[in-house]
Length: 222
Image 1 (cartoon, rainbow, N blue to C red):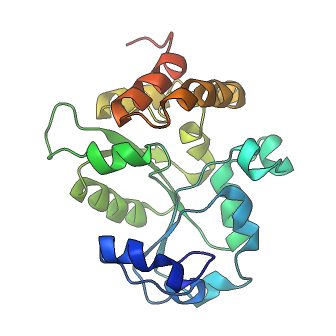
Image 2 (tube, rainbow, N blue to C red):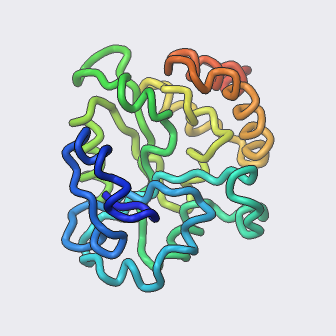
């Protein structure tokens, strides 16, 4: 793992997780899968040519979400460019979009064995079918179902404001709700979700999920 503050700042977290703290330049090298988990505003500040050091077959995962209150205004995104398409243009490599739709507390606690009726499903978007298959296998191993949500250009369906965002859908719900996303309402619903979630920021993940469900799936036919 790496962050902007350097390997020394990650010692405690590394001790808890078993990960190896390295520099940003080192973290991209000789890995099968690379996760970009930084605020959207930080993407353009990554070292230039960083991803040229990664293997061509490394699967790059975009976990990020655009929030103007945190990231500032990014005009291309405000004008409708899909967030992960913007990320691809910034880093010069294709990405797979996944894990952006689940709160961190739920990611740690909501995993269930394969076949469980209440197993949460996550959308996976990308242009490389083989890469998406590998990612789906990983998602299954950590306790979640997955649904192929289409190309990276279609990954707006899983952006903040979507009914699949932080609502912990089952596979059946996810398949249905991905079809009902209204792109024109994403920004408005993103702000509604923020307001609903703010009072639950210190609560358990079930409370956080219910807060999002109360505003993001209201009116959707079950």
